[in-house]
Length: 411
Image 1 (cartoon, one colour):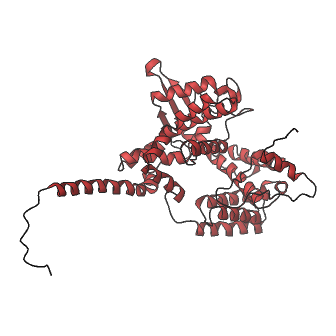
Image 2: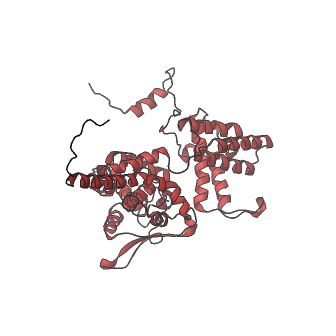
Image 3: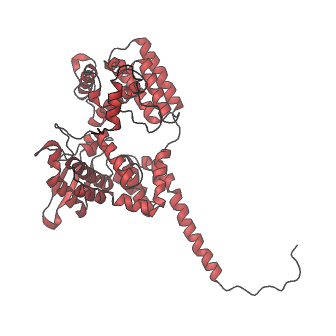
């Protein structure tokens, strides 16, 4: 007898097509860590078209369509794109049929905005966090530009005010990021983190599946750049060979340089990173063996995608997060490498916040102090304990003076 083997995903797809069979719950549960993001191509075509047109207007304002505003930076435009995807994904995960989301206005309508925010609130463990406020604020901006009614806009204003009032007043790192940095107490974790790129290279070389090998090779280079530069995900995904990442010099003096112009960086601060010599062979190995796998030869993007263009930033961070879980022992997003790079340095130099500020490209030193100064209490306490232990050992090693004769019990 021939046995047909199938995956659970394929079996579920079959089950959903059987007439009369109980249908599965397709929407993602509102729990922390549950995947819920949709890909843009999963949205209705009319919504995709309106999203693209809106984002194009942000980049190229048309004076005949309203008040002329300045052209927004690519990073800001990407935040609006992320707002669209977040709202659509949260609504579908909450039970709204995706085919009902036919326009940008349908995403930011007051009732849908509140429904999406309630999903994010439940998913975050019934906590209002800063990103929710940013989503609500951008939804208000979008709503005012796509012709929502005054009643809808008033409802959105009320929601924005509520979210602003309720968002956590705690500044600095989130509890999740503090737990991640607490792992630096484990030397084995630090070793796994610092050798993460090399372990991915070995995995790529031993892989028998070309796609798996290419993905691991790409992620190895991405992690190396994150560890070396601590750059933001958007800048990482959009690196262009010969422009924002290039090789300078020849022979032993050759170095790879990452050069990010001010207009491409979130806070308009130009960044330049000269990579260490041992990073060069990794990048060149990837370019020689796996770069063309994704977009073909001659593609300018360091991390290209099938069909042209650069890799989708959310997909890149999801891939790296999953590999970190396997090779480092905990999920790590691309943005969390910024926190990790700061901790690597501050563990050795806890008072040199200025160096971290310059490395991460913070415009204001207060930003660095807000996020990382309080986290160094643990390092300071450890150093205090070292001093205490040394002085205690010295005290125990000193010869004791002769004891006073016992003249009776001490009262």
